[in-house]
Image (cartoon, rainbow, N blue to C red; front, side, top):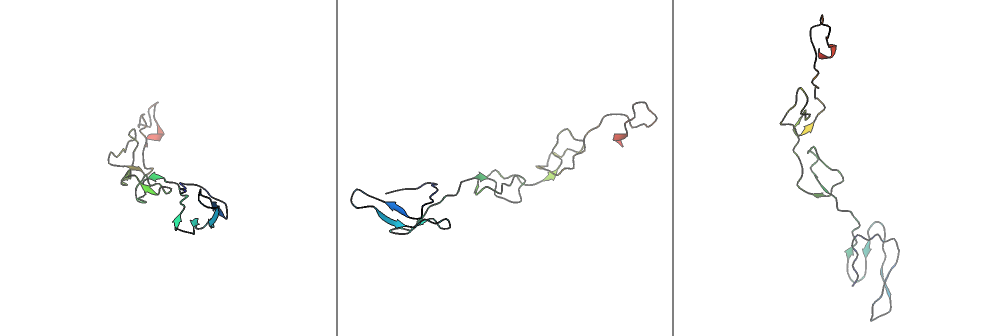
Length: 118
């Protein structure tokens, strides 16, 4: 018995031998189907297993994942920068709305007036 686990086969004719008989051609391996066609119909799976969030609505969605690992984070959009003026502790996905805290004086006649505060 021969087992293939994640093997990449490129041969067009797969030859298998045993201790009881001469080697025999048991099928054709093609890129599209990858099937051994004689005796049993077992597809050879060459796909990678990629764990991640498969929920496209979650903010940590992984489009390459093919196995959901239960790490999806429900999307609550807002500012996730804890040092920002408008930090939202409920937010799980940053929406780019963060307003940085800028220290300075807002009185235009002052020597240390900061125009960025307006």
